[in-house]
Length: 381
Image 1 (cartoon, rainbow, N blue to C red):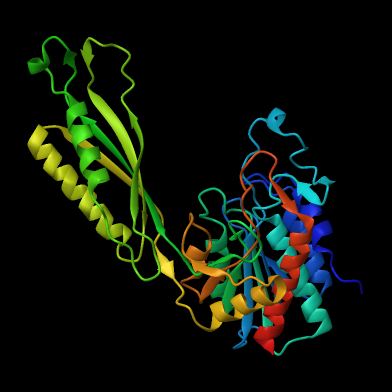
Image 2 (image 1 turned 180 degrees about the vertical axis):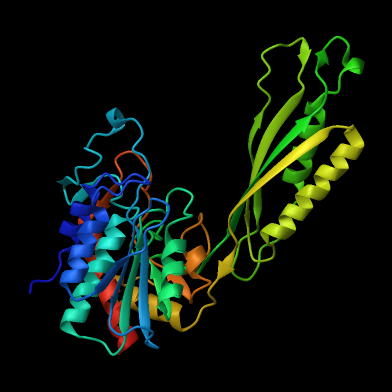
């Protein structure tokens, strides 16, 4: 049987307008490809989200290599801004355009093609698992977490996992991820008493209190970085009072901060710090406050070792580039997988992800498939 062309498979997936939470047939394409190749496939749907689990080989084998990825994509924005059809998968001068070409239908296509060809050509002593979700770009509540819950219930287990997110900043092979920073957002509402700006003593202005709080939060240097992480950061992302009148002291104001934190912190410790600063504020200014916190993920790291060495060696063999081991960037579904098994990430150059005219070099898709094939071959050697 002919090898699976990852470029054709990427194009088929891109033509499915699978903007979260829609699937539009993307996972059906993968289900057919994998089941036809002898993978045992199951749906792990939850909360209206489609999730595909596929395994070749025995359940619970001590050597089970897993791949994880997603077929959902972010919205295209204004379609008139695109110079190419956003779901057309058109190829011009060796470049395929379309939403999801980089993030990350090409990565899914590459590891699905690699897995199919590998088990057909050299059936391993072990198992290969693919856990593919339709819910990564949104809240990710019913995506990879649902797949992992399904696996736990069925006695399925990955020994190690590779997430196929785009990881390279400049050229193929220059970076892989061995961890991710934690991410959390805190929304604060400060409430005082509305009044006339000519008589401030009759009001309680919440704005000085909010500005003092934002200054205290943003001015604190959280840490100096750790062995595997850069220093943690806190960014003020919005301050919103919504007061169009210059002769009115507003009753309340709202603000939000986003924190990207390393393994020196937890979301709990940072939440406690914010609550302490808010308590000081209430005492000093006499205002009332409300706090809402959302944690997108805790920081984690898979220390350099067998798994990162395996992936790095395959990348170098296929690209001639030695990947840097990094924990930079935003969150990914690796933050869920890390509680199941050791996990790293490697994929394409991600410069155009989420942008208008998102695109990928078709040669990079084929190269990525070869990297994944080599990883599987070396793992089961």
